Length: 73
Image 1 (cartoon, helix red, strand yellow):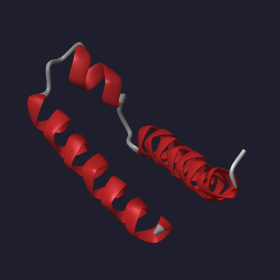
Image 2: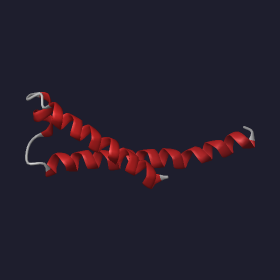
Image 3: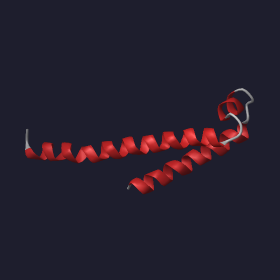
Image 4: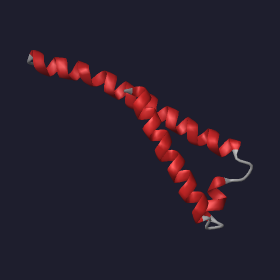
């Protein structure tokens, strides 16, 4: 294999590690958000059709993703 390909493959490893760490932190944050709220987020959005809660949780997840992207960079 050419040297450039091997260097590119080694440069890919930190990207994969950052992706996995970011995904784990995002998943942990969603789990924590579910545990902290006094009601079931899933039940409120799916069964009760609470659109306002869906919008608030979606905005919180987008903000969390932006924050994690800035921290990992």
